[in-house]
Length: 377
Ligand code: GDD
Ligand code: MN
Image (cartoon, rainbow, N blue to C red):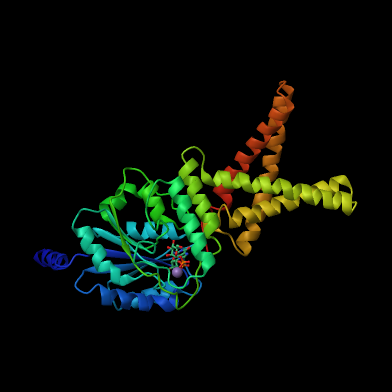
């Protein structure tokens, strides 16, 4: 009894004050260097680092755990069957308990030497969040190519129009926030994409008292960027979610958008098979239907559900289930439209109602049974 209470007191001697959350995907060569960099700049501070790894094929998680076996300040949170920078950061923060939470990339592009100043500014209690900014006076993007700079600036402007903030670098993935401010917003975060900072600012309740500190964005020396290609679409999803998410799930809108493309694919295939290849109409129509379902499935897999993307066998199984779900959806569509038409509803309205019912059906089934199945390796 006495012994355990003494242990408890001993442990309380140095509670962790700062949890550093590092999202990683294929950063194996960098994790050791990140810990060393943190160790060097956080001298005198009681900290821990939580790497949130989405089951990277290069086995980043294993590398982190081997560091963690030697250093108790290091922890690994490995997520299986999931992807996404924002959700990784949120879950990492939720897995910790310290009063201050820092978020920093795992490729050493952010300047960890800024962390002590961020912490001391937060300790003063006048701010909820301190943000590393590339665009505040004194900051910079190093030698980024021109195209990337202009995309980044354009995205920044768009965010100002949509979400009212005058942050100089709303896309920053480098900041420190108090536990209280984070917890107050945790339930409203959309978890989509990678713009976690924007999400924090856009999420109720109330504004965040913020401070920006300039820093120079460094070159990535090892490994490669994962955000370049998917960035635009994920950004659109986040903005869409913040604008319309209250009324309709953003994934449903993405699903409908993909469905619209599917109609075009269908008509193009039909024209090609029936008019150009001169196959029979029914054969052409059936093949066009299969083609459109396949393209819808593939596009939903990379766009609507990119964070739960299916690959290999799971892709094949998903595709079969998707085609089955769509066939039933099509029956429901025709059934409802026919019923309304018989009830003297105008033909166009009856047709649209059928399409809507079919779309909701397909969405509900896909969401539940295709992209949310438990993940087994
Ligand atoms: N867990 C997890 N899951 N981590 C991820 C994922 C993912 O799906 N995708 C990327 N990461 C990790 C990377 O391993 C890296 O540590 C960090 O997130 C940033 O990813 P990079 O691929 O290096 O992004 P970047 O350098 O192109 O983007 C930087 O600039 C953006 C603004 O233009 C980052 O600082 C972003 O946070 C920032 O928004
Ligand atoms: Mn990077």
